[in-house]
Image 1 (cartoon, helix red, strand yellow):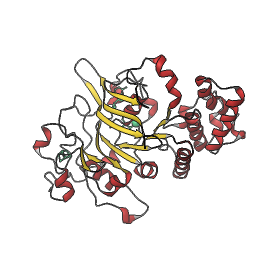
Image 2 (cartoon, helix red, strand yellow):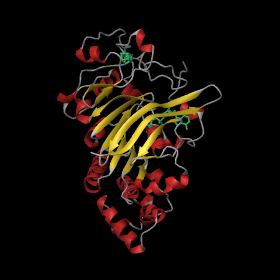
Image 3 (cartoon, rainbow, N blue to C red):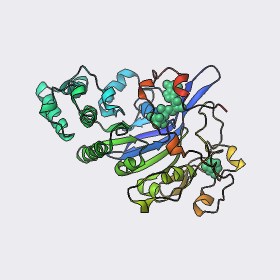
Image 4 (cartoon, rainbow, N blue to C red):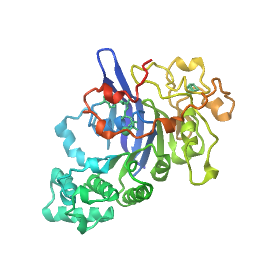
Length: 367
Ligand SMILES: Nc1ncnc2c1ncn2[C@@H]1O[C@H](COP(=O)(O)OP(=O)(O)OP(=O)(O)O)[C@@H](O)[C@H]1O
Ligand code: SF4
Ligand SMILES: [Mg+2]
C-alpha cells in the first residue's frame, strides 16, 4: 500500500498565559496508506481532534511535519493549500450542527464542487446524484433542509459533502458517536462501502472501540497527547503491550462475552495536560509503574513487526512478570468510563484562542 499521509513529530501546544500551556499533542508520528483506515482512539482530552485539525491545517501545529501525497504541507501558504482542500476532507461528530440550516441537501453537497471549480453544471449534477446514491440518499432528498432529515440522513449528507470531490483522505471525527446503535451500524457500512468503491483513506477518530475495530486496518491509541501503542487492528485486539491499551480494551463490552478480557484497572483520573513533565504520562495511574518511569517519556518501540508500544516495562508486562507496584484504588472509575462521556461540542472555542473554560473539564488538577 503506497503512502498517502505522513505525520512526523507533530506537536500542538495551546498557550494559556505567559508560563502555562496545554500540551494537546506531543511528538505524534504515523503514516496512512492510500485506501487505508487508521483508527485513532483514546480518552476524552487525549488530543485526537487536535491531531485531525493539525493535519487539515485548520489549526497550525507548534512543531512537526505533515506530508500529503509526498508534499510537505506543514507550512504551505493558504493559496497553495486551497487547491489541495478538495483532496483532504472532514466529517464532524454532530451531523445537525455541522450542516447549515439554510442550505438544502443539493446546496450543501454541491458546494465543495463549486469551490473546486472546473466542472460544468451537468457534470456537477451527475456527480451529486452519484454521490447521494453512494450514501443511500436519492433525488427526493435534494430539496430537503437539515431539520427535515433524520439523524442518519443528516450524517449521510455530511459524508456525501466530504466525499463528493473524491478526496484521497477524509478525517472522520467521531462520525457515529452521536447516533444510536442501528444508525451507527448503517453509517459504518456506508463508510466501508465508499472506501471499497472510491479507495478513500480515513483517519477514523473515535472512542468507540468496537466501531474502530470494524472499520480500521490499523489502530493508534493516544494517551495525554502521545501515541502509546499502534499496530494492525488484529495485533492491537490480539495482545496489548501497553498497560493503558490493556485497560482500554478490557473495558469494551462485546456482544460475545467470550471476547471479554480480564479486568485491568488504572488508578484515578487522567492528569493535567498543562505543562506536563518529561516522564511517562501514565505514571501515577499505572499499576506496574516504577520511579524510573519518571526519568523520561518512553519512546515508541517496535515490539513485534509493525506493532509499537511506548512503555519501559513492556517485556515484563506482556510476559506477566511485572507485578503490581501500586494496587488500583478501590471503586476508582475506569478511565474508559469516566472520561469518555462526550463533551458538548457547542462549547468548543475558536481554535486559535486558548480558552481555560474549555480546558477545565480535562485539566482539573494542575500538577
Ligand atoms: N482551543 C483550545 N485551547 C486550549 N486548549 C485546547 C483547545 N482545544 C483543545 N484543547 C485542549 O487540548 C487537549 C486535547 O483536546 P482534543 O479536543 O484534541 O481531545 P480529544 O481526544 O479529541 O477529546 P474528545 O474525545 O473529548 O473529543 C485537551 O486538554 C483540550 O482541553
Ligand atoms: S513506562 Fe512505566 S508508568 Fe509508563 S506505562 Fe510503562 S510501566 Fe507504566
Ligand atoms: Mg475530539
